Length: 250
Image (cartoon, rainbow, N blue to C red):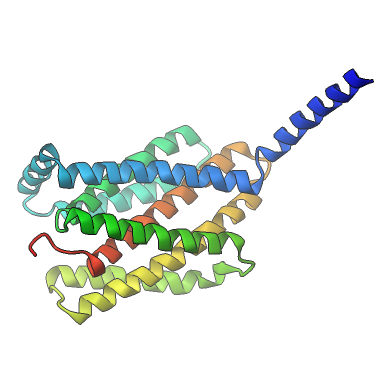
């Protein structure tokens, strides 16, 4: 009787493990794990560029080779990678493993973009802003996970804010903004990407519900959500840095 009892317990644990392997909480944890891996790549590259001599010489020589257009080349390259990854994740012919490689490649390109910003600010200031960004991001991610509100209603508003930021940043590239104008644009950027953080966190649940029973698509959905969350954090960090960061010139 005792042997039967333990055998039954073992079978129950195995069954519970099989069922819980794809629970929403585990799927969310896996997605955030991918996001942290992506951010590790992004900020590893960024700190190499900004705070090591080999990185500094690399970015300096690359700037010369590109005639000063490196920032534009990186932004366009990152945009193409994001579009390519999104298409790959929707395609049945692209396995999740290959999509993961593209995801990490995009995170490395984000690191190059982020590194060019870090060159402008003191390290202590960067660390403090990073901590603030992590705190704000974490709060909105928790809100997006626990709230019963349907945040998909914010999609059009967030998209409008994103389009405004793109236009404003392009305009400021040709006509540099000073004082309150840049502060306003950066503040809007912070609000928009805080909203996207909650929205994209809730999207994990929607992807989980949509791809139940399809393990490959669940993996792709996790990569897609992790990519969006990485973009949210990096952009939130950069806008906060532009508001709160202390320039190296000072």
